[in-house]
Image 1 (cartoon, rainbow, N blue to C red):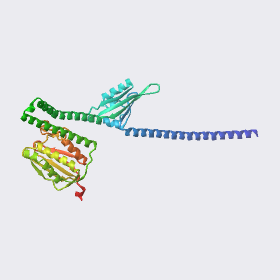
Image 2: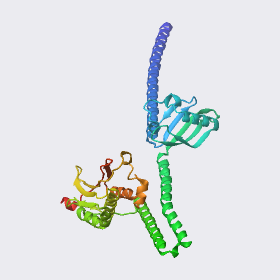
Image 3: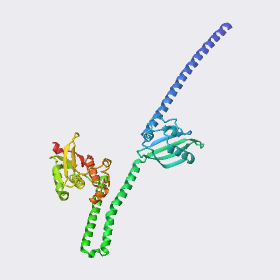
Image 4: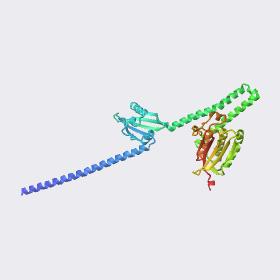
Length: 393
């Protein structure tokens, strides 16, 4: 009896042992699956976080560069790669391996020595004259151990260009003002010293003073016009403008100047209507025709006309038969104060701002202005204007 009970207990214990072993194995498998799922979710979460960080970093306008403690690139965002024109994978490379830029490598060494460098200006070694402002700092642990360096790059190119333009503008204005002011001052002093007692000399000097005063007034008016246009303070009064009638008016206004040079004014403008501000368009025509008369040849011809181009815009032209414009000056004639022949332009009384005003007015109408010329074959200035809706109907 006891032997039977013992065998039954042993069998029960053996069954319990095998059940518990299977149960433990099942629990281990379930736990293993849970651990694998947790690891997968954790890896996916880390990947999502890294992707979100990468999206944020790549959406920044500033360039971002992160170096590890061995000076190797750990992260470089899209803006940084665009700044430096890099197409290769940068991660894991040193700055010299990836960019071969000694100035940036020297900056990293300065940060390691000083802890941070602020407002460092870096000029890119290329033809685009790109300037970058760099703020850099070392990254350290709470124990003070260096872990790497972070560098943030801001594009200063536009500011540098504006600064250079402002300096050139001030220098040009000062130069343009100095000549007439010096003449006025000199002739006034001569008159005060006794020349006014001679009527012939006095009258000649006063005419010179008057001519230079008008030149100063014209320069100031042109400067005010450009300033108002660039700041957007001028509002256009758009309406249908008959271009042929406008050209006739400008020809009448400049007829005396044309007669003095024996210039023939030819109006080939068709009967078309432009949607434009008549006052501003009158400035454009007056500047272009006046220039054509000034720089055209003696006994020459000035023509104005227009056609409609493939985009449905009116393409207006003003043509002269003068000496033409050199190829190297074609892209610069619309710049402020730019003159192809400086001495001749000043003798003619120009301010150097007329074509710049033309460009601004045309652009404010949604068009563009350009010139074509060959040396010895005259020059033709073109501009586009929108056709009036009334004309289209």
